[in-house]
Length: 252
Image 1 (cartoon, helix red, strand yellow):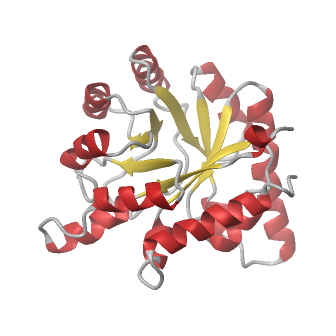
Image 2 (spheres, helix red, strand yellow):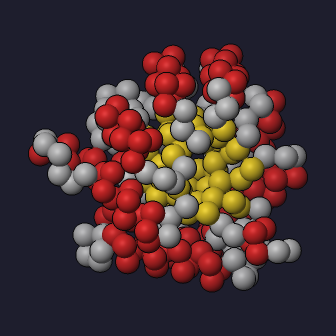
Image 3 (cartoon, helix red, strand yellow):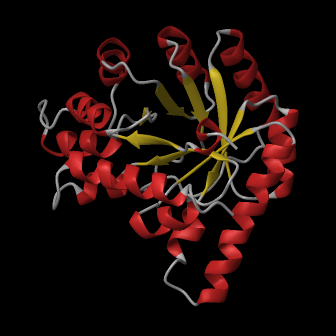
């Protein structure tokens, strides 16, 4: 295995820089400045979730990210016609289709690929027709992996929320959650899907999840932005980059 196969990309989600900005109004702190710092600190991409209610990232933020940032943009979006139109206008490197409910604080689980199957399929087709790579944010379930392939997705991003939330439970629970993600990642890779993971990851959980061989990208946001209150954004991203690089020597 060469170094390119071992490398695990780090995508930095800047949503909550915008959350802080919007709490008071105005333009500070600027999420685009955060993206530029992330680029210099070793991030491989920027992730931003444009929500229906624009609670954090705004349409202007997306325009500025496309114009001012050299890193690939991963646009998280609900599979709606409004968001599809915006994505086609800007043509980010990739779109990750996620579930969205106005009342939720954060994304609570993977996308339901079965209830809105036809709408998701249309969205995937339209995005890929514009040269945009498509990822589906899913729970670590075999049926979801198989459906993602049927829907012609390029990528699956495995929801690591349950693993992260249970990380300080007993060792058997942690082991079961980890193995669930590892086994699904292997399955996805074996049937030709690129595998990403994210949600709720911190330093400790990233140390373990980074060991999963098929993973190509981790997307981390809330912890990075929160931890940068105590340590600089630059330092936090560099620490994640070091953790990931070190753990790729110990693949499982």
